[in-house]
Length: 193
Image (cartoon, rainbow, N blue to C red; front, side):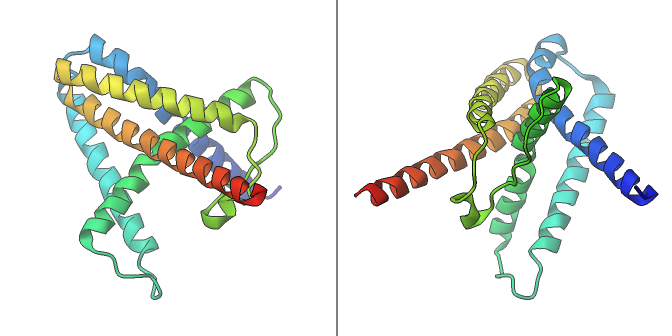
């Protein structure tokens, strides 16, 4: 294997573990709320820098991906909502990467399933782990909402922001799963009738 391919593979593995660690941060948000009432100036400044960096990264991705010649013109409000959705979807994605890392460390050998996009979602074969992932999404959503409540009580606003973003992402994926379930059920009913 050429050196460039090996470096690319190492970078992908590193980004997988980095994204999987986001889910660990979701799980650690509730204990952090109880342990630390004030996380200090360093944490606040790093959180501000991280938030500004994430916002500029997401906005630049939005402008690059939505800026083709044949792309429809979007209003500023719609661009902001799409950018927000782009950011919050990293939390459910981190759950999927986290479960993949746990499966790999447990020695599980599974097949690769492409992420269904658009109309291809209907024909996609769903692996058995999807049922578990939907349950974990529901747990993660409830956990993030509970963390939000405790953060409000403890006045821990940075963790509140993080938990709100996580809850939004998991709510969005649960909504998409519900829509897929309703569509598939409706399609099956039409074929039976």
